[in-house]
Length: 255
Image: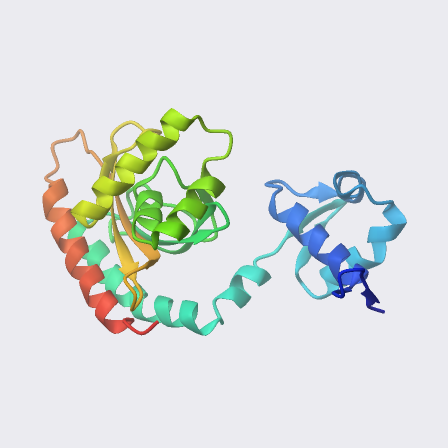
């Protein structure tokens, strides 16, 4: 039963318990045992046992032996949300065409509570390239797509996202990051050499809503070949990606 708190709001302890379990499992790459879940939540085993079994029965959580892991059900449900569903419906055919044209993978990412989540990923016909798995959560700051997702926002939203993404970061690093955002906003896209992987260059354009704010970033990660095979230049890929994103923006202008 719901209990009314001092501030007038109603609490739902059982729901809170279930959400706590889902959140702690979402943060675990390899799953957790009941004992580990109990320890991380600061709850007794008896407090989580029934709720954990319920989540397994509803397919939000999977049980492999003694280890519990999050399933993809929440991710799948999020795609039924009309704006996301419409975005993917319109984007996927264009992304497939783009990937064929440039011979590189491409992906679509959205901002998600201090991180970016990959909601679509297309592999080129040759099957080669630097790909990101759908559902992956990626840090914002080091990436071209992260710059795009923050640069094309209302200034207030940009400031909020900077605070979310750059916790425990020095003021000088934050200032450098802000300068990068200004440059990306001025150019209309991000094109940067990877700070994490050798030979990787990423180009990313914003998918904009009717107010000009980025609801997603479409990105082409380019790996330099060393076997003499001809590749499109960064500029050529940027032009094709810009054309693809322009078409998509027209289709979802009222998203």
